[in-house]
Image 1 (cartoon, each protein chain N blue to C red):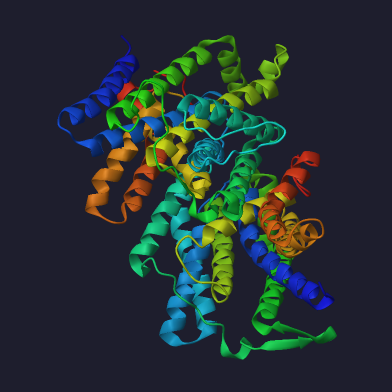
Image 2: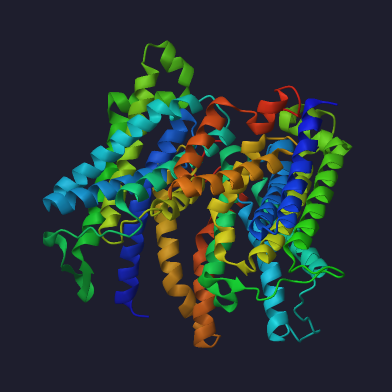
Length: 305
Length: 329
């Protein structure tokens, strides 16, 4: 295990964490303001990736593809919110879980219908396809580095949006008292649709960015969705700051666990068994992390009781 | 006779009649489908105890379904290869005897339910939903990455496990076995829900503060309900493994948890026979729509959406009227 590999994996973990944040931010905003648990968030991620792949293959432009992912996911978000989600705000969590589970079935099968079951590929833009030389003689893929950069910029932008703008003020007011801001003359229906669309756009954007390094396929959103849930449970549901810290924790734990645990077990086991035990434990590591955090703080790191 | 009792009776008789007619007509496939309904209904009966009576929205019941399945798969695979599970400190061999497998499936899933429930029940609401989901996923990824028992490819049970005095390879006899187990579990759940334990559990769902005020600790009640619920779903998992003669990590996936919950909701939450009606409807839809379109999950999704948004009592609620069952509000 050398330093170069360790730093590379740290960067991978960071990249993974930043992508998780884009998913988790939308989930936690939607829960924080509307009190809604949205299982279909992974479908919006998938829609963003498919829209990007379709536009990229039609026009060849990655920038247009990214814009398409934002637009498609936001549009899907607006439609879903106005047709279905709006009816769920006053329902209990069970109904929300079921209705959004139903949405997943519809979106997944609908996408399969349009695009088929085979994965499609979205190419990394030519300008970012090479590697970048970093200090200590590390060469790291430029595209992954760009993802980290974009993710951090988006996180900062989201922070500014929420703390410095009028719509951010309304979002924060919505988190503290939903009825009151309605009474003060804010159009809640429009605000809710806007927040849902914002969360959807972030998820779709993440899907498009990740789509270029993985394959774009039906069901790609679900593993990410569950990790995003783990993230916001760790961070405290409703807290953007919690989502950021949680995303980095989950991203780093998962990535580093996969690299370090097999090596750790190799110290006192034979190599093949060490790889198996290490891999099995690594795949469980973030859930163990979550259980441990909930044991001490049942509402997550930054959650309010 | 109350309308719901009438519906339950018709449902039971129908569930019994379909495979018998199919048996007379030598239609093995229909018997297998009916067996699948019975087993999935049993998994739903387990979840319904936690969800309907206890108000515990668990999105991780696939965990118990999978543990039951793997209990059957692992014991049978060791019996098939004559390779003992462990030799030291004492010899444990694999087995193909159903009663032993069932017992182990029940005990194993109850123990896991005790451990995960003790942790998850410290939280409530959305946190509970998500933490149960996460525990289920933990098992899912564990079985995928653990190579000893087939990993991602799963395990095959070459010959269906045996039950003393019966030929389980005969579809109608295996159906009968599963049907009796479903009836026994329904009876147990019905008795439980009318017992002091069930009444207190129901009360804790409706108003936790009042239950505390009369000196009952909701946490213990819920943990107990979660454990029994997990054990029943685990038993269903063991039967499901024997039905398909195959277990794979898919049994642990969160789609399985979602589907078990769908049976409960389609049938009607907190209705004793809700999961039976729901599982039957699910399998009928699957068979009917699969022929119409390859993408039948779209219609299932749409139907589920309509039930959740507009017909909240599920199938039994629709037929028996809203004021029949325990009520879910």
